[in-house]
Amino acid sequence: MGQAVAQSKQEQVHTKIWHEQSEDDNPFAAKRCLCAGYDVYADILPNASWSEYLYLLFKLQQPQNWQALLLEKIAIAIANPGIRHHSVRAAMSAAVGGSTSASSLMAALAVGAGKLDGAREIYNMLECWQDCQLDLTKWAQYIQQPSTLTRSDVWGEMEHFPGFDPNGVACALPVKQVMAELTKYTQGSNLIWLAEHQHQLEALTGLPLAMSGVIAAAFKDLAMSPEQAEMLYLLLRLPGAAVHALEQRESGWKKYPFFADAVTVINDPDTQA
Image 1: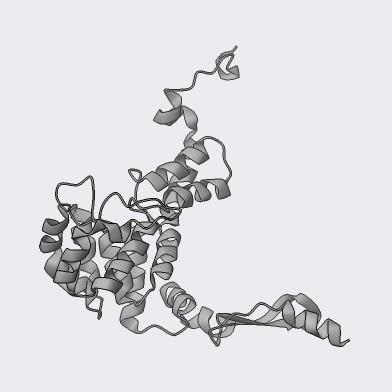
Image 2: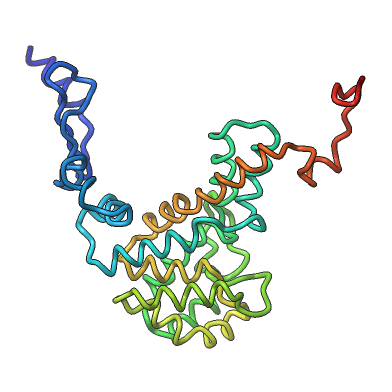
């Protein structure tokens, strides 16, 4: 008996995020679910918005109104990176090639996880914010010493300073629009500081500010850690990948230029009488 109890304790999952009470007649079904102490289906569901719940999941505390609104605007801004973006293209290519929905989303996650407008770039930018804070001198030193961003890991070396566009000449209009909109909601200092020092940072890097740089500053205002910001960036960009994958799957590979021009079908039943 004592051994069985000890084994049961060893097999428990320890989490501060979630607590469940099982149904009386079914130990595999939850009767009550608590997230950070709040009843999910009796309290959160009827009273909270999606952004409020998302913030609660990540930070384990109820957001202030401005925090929920800022997170909501971030989600809108990056929900669909568009068909130019390599993560969306990966999902489209997977879907039009006949892959499952899960495979299409995994393709978007894999391609959108790296250091070129990917989630790891967000992680690196949050590290910059942690080290440099609101000190332009520290930013200048950080930018001039790229070795601080080239630690050997699974992602390889950073080929440009994070948060800035290595292919750009001037800051893109959507980047300007998103920064102007997000600064209306924040009560943090990082987004506002970035807006005030944008041109100085662009001169230091030799690159225009990118969307990733704006979103990283917004995540910093929400007190997200680099790990939390990286995960949120992966999550919040999936809607665009999903809908474009569905659309291209419906249209078929023959209308998809990257496949149709490269594939020759022999004895195609559609062409036979």
